[in-house]
Image (cartoon, rainbow, N blue to C red):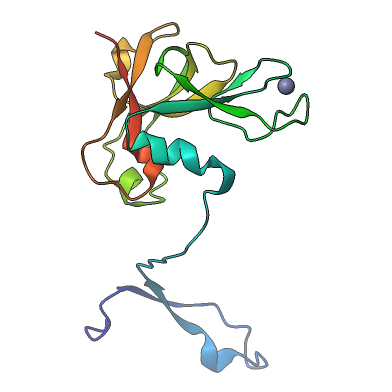
Length: 172
Ligand SMILES: [Zn+2]
């Protein structure tokens, strides 16, 4: 085993196909585990104001002025009326509609990797909204049930993605 490569290494010999196997000389293979990181830029687009206002501890949704439906998470366009919506502020209070206990983290970014498993992913119907908002609920799993009253809490810790400026907690 090499000590010159700092990755996790596994060396295996694949079964060869006999004297006529043209790849006989290449049947010893090395598998390595690489830790990859990737930085990329993307735009939060028409959703940007939602994230910007989280820094101000304000929770915004959008409302269709034609059908009065309120979207949280915000939608710039009402899918029923195909008309642009308008920003509206909610209290950030709501109730758990359904939830899931996650034993594995997707590890997609530093915010998610920092979560201890298991954690609760809750679908919250915010007061004044017509759609479910899926997000982290910081609560003991045995206390989570449908109808549990929750509120948006705001992170004081630096985060990588602005969606993690908020999470849900049970209301006292
Ligand atoms: Zn509408």
